[in-house]
Structure formats: C-alpha cells, structure tokens
Image (cartoon, rainbow, N blue to C red):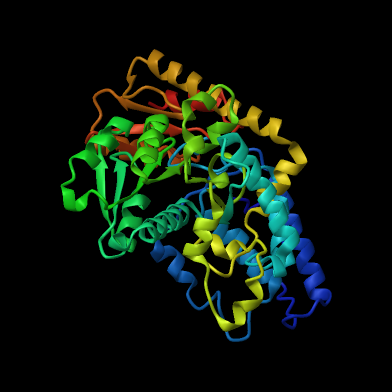
Length: 464
C-alpha cells in the first residue's frame, strides 16, 4: 500500500458532519491525491499484515469523543493501517485468487461511493441498474445463456452460490407437495468450493460430493441411481464447478447438463474464479454445456478486473429466482409493479450498485480488451508451467489448468514451504502460499493480473 509518497498536514481540520466546508474541500483534495498516487504505483508495494498486538496499540487513538479531524485520520490510515494490508493487485501476488482491477473501474468506484445510490429497486436506482444489467448481459452472452437470462451483482461467490441454491430449492418445492415435506439434497464434486457445503448447512440440506476432483455426468447419474426409492425425489440441484479454486478443474458441464435435464434437477454452475475464461477464445470450448445452466456465478473482482466486492449471479429464468427471493412488506408495495428490482434475485434487500465499476470499465475499454487481458494471463500461466518443468528442483503436481499451476519443491517439508512463503512476503517480493493436494503440501500460482510477467515468475522461482 502507498504510505510514504504523500505528505499530509497533521492539522485536524475539524468540520461539521453533513456539510461541505473549506476543511472538507481540503480533505477531498488530499484523498484524491492519495488515490491517484496509489493508482500510479507500478507495482504497488506489497506490504504485509501486522500482529493484532501491534495494531492494538492504536486503541483509543482512532475513535475518540471529539474526533481526529479529516487530515489526521487520513494520515493514520496512510502511515499505519494501509501498510498492514497486502496489495492484492501486486503482479507477484499469486496466492488464493488475486484481483487486478482496471484503473478506470477503481476510479469509478469513487463515483459509486460519492453517488450513494441504493440499487435495490428500479424506483431508486433505474440508471445504475440498467447499466449493471448491461454488464450482466455480456456475461450471459459469453456463457450462451438465453435472451431472457438476468440476475444481480452480489458480494461474492459465497453469496451467489447460496442465493442460487435457495432459488433451486424453492423451485424444487414448488414442483411437488412431497418435496416441501422432505430434506433436499445437493450434489457436487470433491473439488467444489467450501461455500457449497456452507450453503447446504445454512439451507439445512444434505450434500453428496460425488466422483473425484472433476464431476462428470456419469457421476451425477450414478449418484442419483444409487439413492433408495424414498430419496429419489430429494436431489434439488447439482452444483457444478467451472474452474475449481485450488486446481482450475472444469466439471463435465455438457454431461451434467444432460443428466440434470433428464432428471429435472436444477443445474447450477459455480464459475466464481474460472468463469472469466469464457471471455478467452483459447479456453471457451472447455465450458461447453454451460449454456444449459439454470444459474451461474462469476466474480468480476477475481479475473474480470473489477474492484472488490462483485459477483455476477445470473439465472436462465429470473422469474424462478424472483418468486424465491422477493421480500414482502407494506412499505415495499411500491416495488411490486413488474419492474426489475435487483433485491428480488438474491438474499438481500439494501445493496450498493457494486456492478457499476465493472460496467464502467467494460464501457470504457470494450469487450475485446477483456478477452485480450484474460488471454494474456492464460499465456503467462502456460509459460510459468514450462518454467517450473525446466527448473531442476521443481515439478508440476497436476496439469496446468486455466491460470493455475500447482507444483512441488523436491525434498521440502510443510515447514519448509511455510518458511519460504513467509520470507518471500517479508522481503516484499510476492505472496505465494502453500496449498494441499491429496494431503501433500505443495505450492500454487494463480495468475489473474495482466501485469504479471515472465520476469515476475522467474524472480519467485529463483528463490526456490
């Protein structure tokens, strides 16, 4: 994070709340100056977390009865709090699933905050909602979903998966009185994201993890066939994964779609990480079958260059989601006029227009730029895999898939991996954390930043 490039006055600059006065004018210039300096950093400093005991020394110094004033509070953030946060847009942040928002999406997030739009209903936020829906339409189109498909932007994949599966359960219950009296069942692969299991727990449904790391249509068919007669009607959804978070594996969507259609089971696709690769011609065919999905999620804050937090949740038939999620209340009657209200498509009511920064970046740069940027990261991942295979002390653990490389350092223990990872971050060289594959501690690159280059990969590999 930026913490040494902007010098701010330490005067408190107190001002009245809800009033633009000279102190607020001065503070706005300081905030915009900091934001621009942060955008210009190439690369940003990666920084690292501080222990809670260190930050706890600030107790009583941040929230006070009389207030610090704008400039002093900003100074506190820049000099102390920001350096305790890791920059996920650093080109050598290759852990988890990073983020790499375009500059224009980050800038427009300032506008979204300043505009204070409540994007729950068409009445309150028609213009913002129209723009968000245009961005959702582009995603639906690259997935091949029908013209009537639509949905909403939610906070992340966990919220998206839960909302989609709640809609699936509602549809399942609506189809038969018997279904309303029994516990539902969800089928997924062993590689499905933990949020699918969490959604099942929240919904008080059962989860069967079928097959191996990749779920196939045959796995789903055999799982359903093995259920006893009393349970044959219990499957409410198959949660398919379009690019598992750990390994980048894409489930057999065509086969699963066929089985779901035959068995009248909701077909949900979790593409929170991998779904962005739909935009790349080189990988689009890997997702064949996704066009049959009843619901689909992808996180633009992961690999479609939007800032946190932003998950696109799309339904093939939005009407089914609306009947499941619409909230009812006397004061909400003005919303029931047939217009498009984003609050009807997920488990939320109040919401910010979190899809607007993504829409703005798409509008500024065009969809071809997005395809090119995703292709660039895919090329970098392929090159990284080749570099790993050529390294005398490293070997690939699994096939390189999408933008993920999983590999081992020969002769290392779990403690060796952790020590190396900690030292890499402490030096400010990058963030690469260990993961597990079949119980073995290994390393993993996830490359979603178009600024990540061969030189960045080489610097990390040289340290191994």
